[in-house]
Image 1 (tube, helix red, strand yellow):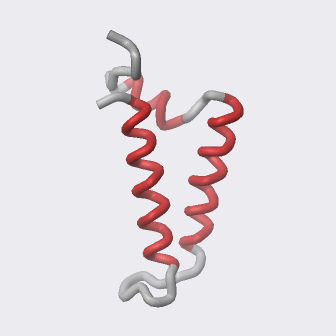
Image 2: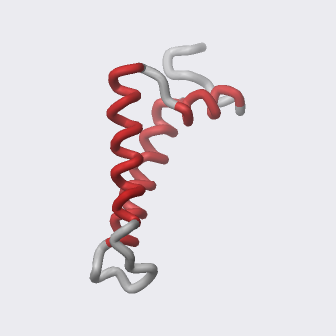
Length: 71
């Protein structure tokens, strides 16, 4: 698996998890403050789209995960 795919999986998982925890009909940990976490993930995705830098990508590279297109 490449860094690009892992970043998308982690970001999508974080967004879905924080939405589930922030929705009023959720049976556990219902708190609207979880939606701030969703906003944080979205803001990081937006800034990485403009700057082409992502902290998670840097971390994954240091852990030895291969980049897309690198053979």
